[in-house]
Amino acid sequence: MNKLFALLLFFCFLFDNPVSAQPNIAVITISNPIPVERKGEVISVAWNDILLKYPKIDTASFKIVNLVTKKELPYQLEFIGKKMVQNLLIQIDLAINGKIRVAIRKGKPAAIVYKTFGRFVPERKDDFAWENDKIAFRMYGKALEQSPSEMAYGMDVWVKRTDRLILNERYKRGDYHKDFGDGLDFYTVGSTLGAGDIAPYVKDSIYYPKNYRRWRVLDNGPLRTSFILDYDEWDINGSKVKVSKKISIDAGSQLCRVEAQFSGVQKFSLPVVIGIAKRKEPGAMLLNEAEGLMAYWEPRHGEDGTTGVGSVILSPVTEIIVTGKQLLARTVTSADGSVIYYTGAVWDKANEITTSIAWFDYIQRFKARLSSPIKIQTE
Image (cartoon, rainbow, N blue to C red; front, side, top):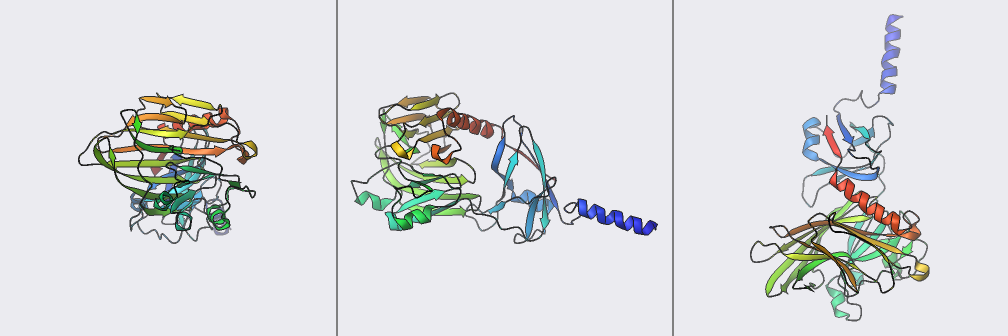
């Protein structure tokens, strides 16, 4: 009877602790240090940290499980354009000042829904377009320069009210200025920086480059898509400068991360502006130089609804200028010529963020999360 009782206890332990009972396991503790909820946030764990705890991990056969709920979490192996895995990306929910523990265990993972995507679009004048489950964007390529009536410079927004990936569908239809139930393109860029593009700003003048010339995808979902756009050299008040933009978008986020790398003959700190297109009709603005926050709630665009655009700038902002055409946040590159910031948009018809107050609050909370990153400990 004692042996039978012990055997029953053992099987109960396995049932109640299916993850803990597995060999070759790594446990990750994820903590939120601030009183701000983090819902659907994508976190990054250095792959080398995983290998230290789980050196024989099979990258084709493992799953990540919440130790409390026993639910699987979606993940992605991030390569950043390299041959070897660089990071493990996990999408998680964290309550205010919350903490969760997740385990890596052997086994076939559940199918992961792709929530980010990007590609070169040669069939539409060399666009490069990207999206997640919330919003979509594009940058213009060289071929557009052959069509002066369509020529534009900055980042374009394609609004969405679906969590499906829709870029390929819209390009295939060839009619993305009409809402077929999932959103449309009604954002106007023109001769502005659009939804948060960047350009040199010298002697009160913006020096726009031509449209991007080369592209390279680094990772393409399911949780993060990243790519690089390279621009040809152009003249900045007598100096020759190039720029390369590394852009990434995470599942669940309204904003993209932009790392602009300017280069010239020598190392320098270059004055630049990050800009948001402004409309003629009145709109609401958030202009916070001290925190590096700039956001705009556009005037309503008829039946199409309202777009909000916003940028969170990590380098010091010296001034935010409001002109008749743009909101311009002035900053300078670091000594190596780089600037890192976040920029993006929202649509009120997606029925998640429907007012300027809610949009500005989102931007402020986004900055708070950046300033107090999630704490990660691998056990």
